[in-house]
Length: 522
Image 1 (cartoon, rainbow, N blue to C red):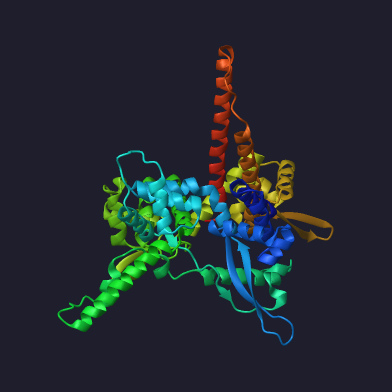
Image 2: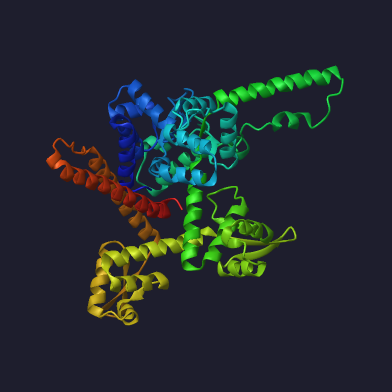
């Protein structure tokens, strides 16, 4: 369940990108859950046409998913099919990370067209190949003599599809099996059971809209005809020639559909996985060694994970070695050195298909990063003594008495009590009572990471929202125009400071979003 600060942040992002009208519709969906067009128009006070146009904008930019459900009508009447719309909170949040996504693609492909294609999909949401071609040919070229051909763009798009950075858009309006009137998302309740039912319905809608991977990542390959013919020679048979002509026609028709009707979008799942890999490798490099980080990166790259959301990574020793040798720092590593790094990473070994397999759970690395982030936050906010106390409770992972905490951390009992009480008041700790004997109560303290991470995540939403609003306010302040020579230097310095302020705020926002992804996306 997303907290209030998270919802406010999502609405602010939509307001900044699409204006107040679209943001009002999005806010309605975020706060009330899935709604029909009539319910949205009623709640926002918009006309049906305005509400519909706002929904189309949100759908175009992958911020809303539509689905159909069957609602029972009056007794004896046939059920009525109603289209519901639900906001996609994660996709809205990803709009903060477009520069990071662009950097990933630019770093992997030595092809400027790949970067231009992914940039177009991030900016415009869903586009056909024909629209991508029109966008590419209409942009001013850096080199006036250079030209962009459809074939080169098709080849670049195929690269992105094969690497899973681009995917076909999901089904526009999947049908979900009928539900009772009391279980509809528009009548969301606060009860736990009702919340589970509502969430399950939305998950069903997303699952029904999702395409199979074979279709989801189907590009402009040339193998369709060969697969249908099975590699057989046509010879002189008239029937075979007619069949060949029909297949050629089918192939041309499919190619035309792919170019003019199929909608493509950026695959956020893959892009977030790349950022997660980057964080895990950086964490291992800092905590263990550079060589261990090289081996971990090789494991992730060679595993070919079918589902990027899965934390488990499994790869064979031969594949790991092959990828290690591709890295500049890995060419000096022997097989024994790689095995030592795998042990250092605490990888689990097994035998499969007569090969040595190694597996690692990226979730453990992410958990370690979360612990370090929280401990760093406590250190900055509450000081060294609080940091020692909090770290002790994180390691113990059980209730600890006040006297024991004071003795182990070498913090005076009175000071320790004040620190513990402050951490408890700020929802960083849980407090329990224990009765040693009648008339005496002892305080026990512990850390519940689940509730703590949720609390910190909500604080981060609030911080990102405030920082985004500060950046927007700074951009709205116009730079001073130099009118007189005497004021030239003073106004130039003022303008320079304003630009530097915006750069510092934007850099802070990027770093804060890194921490936000750690708690929410990884």
